[in-house]
Amino acid sequence: MAPGRPRRLTLIAGGVLLTAVGAARIYTGLDLSGVLTGAIIGVAIPLVLFRLLAPERSFPISYRRGKSAHLSVEGPRGEAIRRALADQLGISVAGVEPFGTAGSGGSTPLRIQLTAQPQDAVFGKLYALTHLRSDRWYKLGRTMLYGTLEDEKPFNSVRRLVEYEDYMLRLMADVGVPSAVPYGFVELTPEREYLLVTEFLARGKEILDAEVGRGTIRDALSIVRRLWNAGIAHRDVKPANLLVRDGKVFLIDVAFCQVRPSPWRQVVDLANMMLILALRTVWRRVTADPNVCRPVARPRARVPCLCSSRSPWR
Image (tube, rainbow, N blue to C red):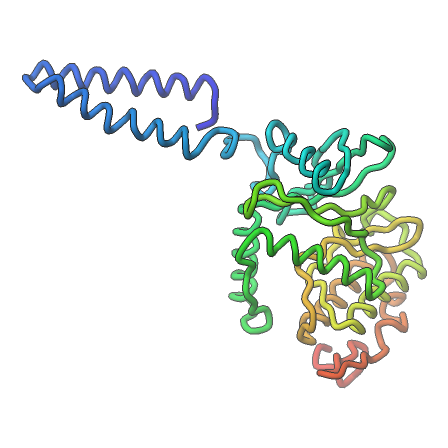
């Protein structure tokens, strides 16, 4: 129960009830020492152990509405973020606030204001044990829906989850896919909480809120082309993960990316991208772009063209 008046009233009511039961048992002839021993073993020892093993600062409870994946960054956790960024990455923080939570369910996205340059900011993704459990349930659900097409192993620790996303961001930069520049990650609580820090794409808009012309279509589909050529599948192409800034498209949130994926996963990326673009422009412009029809040269397997009459996905 969260701290406050309801908790105090509950504790008082419980104390009154235990006192009444103890008095009744003493009145019926039981020994006073037996009642006191029962109260100590049943109440005092569990209460002390609970305060020692599960303190409020480690397991805060609140009844606010919102996604369970989004953690509070106020109080001790906010101070821990500031200390970790200063000690491990040399970043002085002026403020930390949630940012873009509507399109994120597997982490806590943050906008981190810098002290040295107040007009600038960096982007942070806070990962904890709750997000690790969400990743496991997400992958289990996809395996049940699609079978071997989506069969994969979940991460076994929060550290591995953050390390993998940091690696994929650097791989995106190496293969030329426009994405947020990674700055590394910091450890808040060993094996429990980590913060991934990347470039904050200021002035970036979701693709459904931006102007989409021929150049934007070509840029967005060329991202899929580069992913295919590099043997990577994003697996989470959606409007919230496509930002447009100064006419250039950026692909963000690479936590679900996979290296050397199956043709199924690569084609799903293309299909999602085409559907998103078709929502903002004429669909014929999307299907007529040359990036949709050129075949992919892959040493392991060839990804069929969606526009070909021989394609099994038509």
